[in-house]
Image (cartoon, one colour):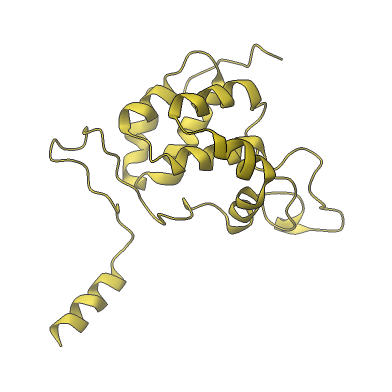
Length: 175
């Protein structure tokens, strides 16, 4: 009977970090993972399109290291919206499905979201995430670092991560 009560309590608990920080505390190199450890908390339609994307399945499969993925972000990412421009069929949709918020019919998932999920498969360390959000070569590398934090870190920790970066005014100099 006690096991059933314990299971019931666990079901009623709010989501918590799945991997606790190391004994060194909050600033250990192992990051907690908040939410779903398989989906990265992504919208199901976006995740389905990422996983079925030839870019993700072929080109990104070949990338094995953090540095290779960062280089790919630098050379390939030109925006951080979830869908490639002009690839979604939104004609006739109204309200929240009218081409807004990543709902409705899917399109071609963006390079950025494929790379974001690739970063997730690498199970980044705190040092690697800090490397992304402080990277000086591209605002897109930093943006994907912050998106990684947003999708994988406990909500209570987001302000600590984002504080000090909110006034970044850099624009992409490649355009």
